[in-house]
Length: 89
Image (cartoon, rainbow, N blue to C red; front, side, top):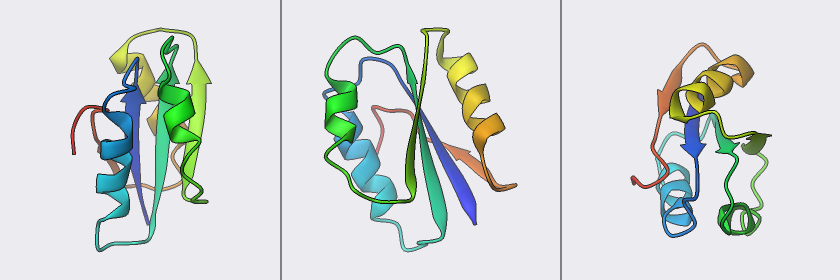
């Protein structure tokens, strides 16, 4: 298994595309951790449209992208961790 960590801050325009790109991969044995770094837009509403048990959202106060990535690493349930920015696919 592997973990994909997406640090997210006000990514309402992009987060769905990023999630879909992870779900479209041929490897299905993964967890997707989205660390909401204090978003104030509709980002979290976009995530609620996905009903996949592999997706986990962790909320934290805005601490910056590095802190969000580190939180994702700490929460990962695998030894392999990959990062994807919220505005990438």
